[in-house]
Amino acid sequence: MRDGYLQTGELLLPADKLDPSAWACVACDQYTSQPEYWRQANTLVGDAPSALRLILPEADLGQAAARVPEIHSAMLDYLESGELQVGVADGLILTERTTESGARTGLVMLLDLEGYDYQAGSVSAARATEGTIMDRIPPRLAIRRGAALELSHVMMLIDDPAHTVMEPLAARRDTLELLYDFPLMMGGGHLRGYAITAPEDLAGVFSALKALREKAEGTLLYAVGDGNHSLAAAKAYWEEVKPTLTASEQANHPARFAMVELVNIHDEALVFGPIHRVLYGFDGDTLLPELGAFAQANGWELAANEEGQRIVIVYEGKEVAVSVTGSGHPLAVGTLQAFLDAWIPAHPGTRLDYVHGESAARELSQQPNTIAFLLPALHKAELFPAVEKLGALPRKTFSMGHANEKRFYMEARKLR
Image (tube, rainbow, N blue to C red; front, side, top):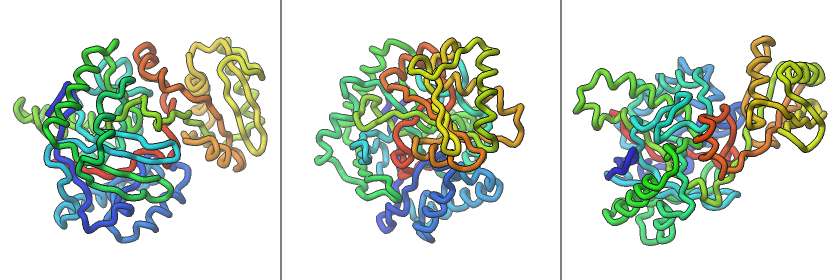
């Protein structure tokens, strides 16, 4: 079944014999500056079959040349040995993810990549909400090219203030077939999944999606909340494959689709937070005057008050709060990123990371020659209007919850 660019599909799950708590692992783009998290996850999993063997954490991107062939081999091994089984033959999976923020509801389904574009200026129905960092696509694309399986940490947002799409199903989840119910590793909370295969249930979902589409005020229907670079890699791969296929082959080729979890931006358990910046390899006392000089050259004004765009700069036990006025960027994150994008190329040996969670950023700033830039949060109600008006927001503008609340890899899908 299908509406617009969303549809049902065959979704795979770890076999009943497997421990789901060892199978499911957090999104690959989390804990990038905390490799000890991934080391601990590997220790917990041990030799057990796990999604951890089928993904490449960004913390390990330097090992991509060796790891990608291992990932492809593990995918084939899991398929051949029966580690994966069909969860739903042609349907959806209703998810309930419980964390400290509450119980978040989602629907796992397939997105037609013909309706998605991550390029700047896109007006496609599904699009990136933040600027895409192009050099993050190639490692993911290398995995996609030879992959027998797709796992996904993509969360696709819909603007459904009346809670019409998935919430009616969640209200009667006790009547649905329970597919999985288990605690997630390392403080990830709890995850439940229910099969959505009954014709009347599927009809209700797609009817509600059609109604949202028909009353949408702009062209943006599906906004990528998490996983844009992985989705961009899937799109890039589809554009590679498409010219090699006939028109009839293109219509249903597995590479044309990507697995996503649809989430209502109005879900009370979906909490938006900022993504902070951490700069390595430079002294904060030296950087502050350079920030001031850049601001003056660009006609900005810096002040130590609550007005304007507030940025808190923390380094080696010191904390400086500045407010910027006069910037041409409507958000503080865009103003800061404009400075960093101009400043970093002139300072070889420095490195920038994007960190979820203020406490983690503050902890990292205690290291020598390490500077944390703490940013204000974007209110989630502003997201769809902002993207419609401004286009893709500056890269790494917002985070949906803390790192441990991000989507865990659970479901899989055959790519060939």
